[in-house]
Amino acid sequence: MSDNIDSKDLKLSAKDFASDQDVRWCPGCGDYSILAQAQRVFPDLGIPKEKIIWVSGIGCSSRFPYYMNTYGFHGIHGRAPAIATGIKLARPDLSVWVATGDGDLLSIGGNHFIHTCRKNIDLKILLFNNRIYGLTKGQYSPTSERGKVTKSTPYGSIDFPFNPITLALGANASFIARSIDRDPKHLQTMIKRAADHKGTAFIEIYQNCNIFNDGAYELFTEKETKEDNVLVLEHGKPMVFGKNKDKGIIIEGTVPKVVSILDGKYSINDLLVHDEFDKSGVLAYLLGQMSNNPEFPNPVGVFRQVQKPTYDSELNKQIESVKAKRGEGDLDNLLFSGNTWEVN
Image 1 (cartoon, rainbow, N blue to C red):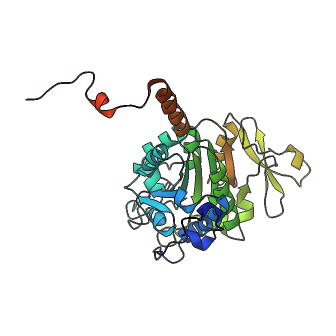
Image 2: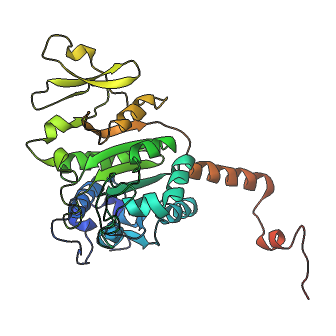
């Protein structure tokens, strides 16, 4: 690139975000779709490639930085949010993204995830949730359903699985959404929404592992069943779903309920209206509890987003404030002041 050309002025395309590395996922893996949607969205973000970094841990999803033609860091198992936090604190000018899987983020990485959400670090976290350990060949994961028969649970899992949406809500993430690998337009929209958010933006992506957990989400992806089993959340709109848009969600007491809007008892005006800016988080939690519950459709879209100060911006403000009062720090003075001792 010529020294007198600003990369911000260049018109980028999806191909510009594709690296020269051969993509090594199993044929048919849902990761291909997630990669494709990210590469399609990033040219529209207006961020120079040299200002973007992808961080990952260990797992199939964690190969992602190799395939994005940006900066990247392949970390160790579960540590991607911690590494990404350090990068954002040191370089607040960068757009920092995390690619991770359900085993990587919610097992060994669970502690790092909840504290990233709690602190509201300005990171974007994409969780590839296939409900299985794929890279290590098919053991059950923290999101595998009870009774799941795998190589590590030959008689069925007895664990209660994590619900990533309610976990993120409980940790107070400021942007929480869900999408599906086989709905490219919706996934693109969610990635763009996450990019635009200031703070911890978390997207759970239902991702099919066609080798070790094929069809885990087929109820929500197949033409014959998806419209009756997926609730698309749209801010300010009533919660309607079904092939004929004939079903909806109401609140009865303190719990959601599925009703028909064609039998005369209820109309569209009686349905719950989605409010993604609800500060209490109660509505988002109720929607999160509907996830993978056969009594309800599975919600996708933005569950909740709120605006609050980010840890990285507050830290840098604090540093600048202290420097303005006390001047630049001196590392030698810091290390050799206070309580010191000599060891002979």
